[in-house]
Image 1 (spheres, rainbow, N blue to C red):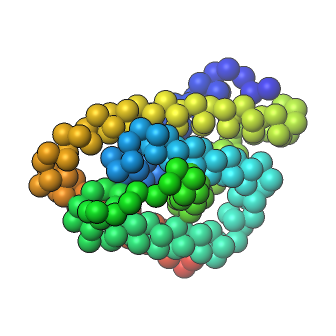
Image 2: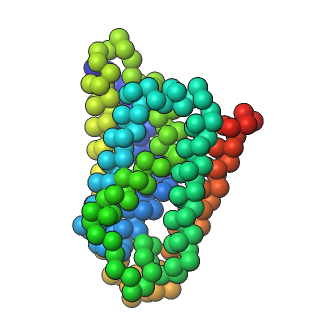
Image 3: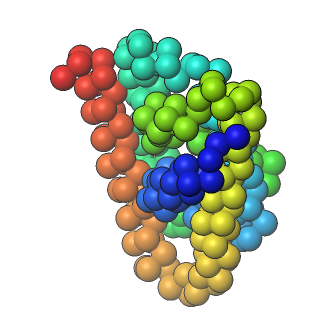
Length: 214
């Protein structure tokens, strides 16, 4: 069992990461604005599923392998950056809503869930967190690694649902107002698209730094 003070510290770190604007938050926001509350929560479900993948990665020690072989970690950062840039450019070029061009049919909840999981799995921020933070809270002398990982995963999941759930509810209310103000909606879409492209450039630069050792 992980001591309560350390669990509280872990929560603070996770909360700080989750509330930062990034790929996961932009995807959830766009899903909620296009498809409403149900679609937004489907996106959250996918993000949470991707989070469990990252916990499994950390628990199995794959994160250590990635740290020992910078080229592998750099490749993950580059793939995640490319995916992030693709979404950002798509949002910018759509010039309409945050999730789909005008007149397009929003993706189903199942498709949104799958895209959410892939979004989180390819999120460079999540890998950086698993490499830098997660190993500090899992120790063999505290019992089974799986039990400790489940404790941390519960905190991650609860934090994601709390933060992103609040965002979805707010976006669901805002989508009707934005529908009456298309110029504001287009401006917001372009802003999110530009943010994702900027994050992609940063992630690609980080991948190059890990690859070259500079």
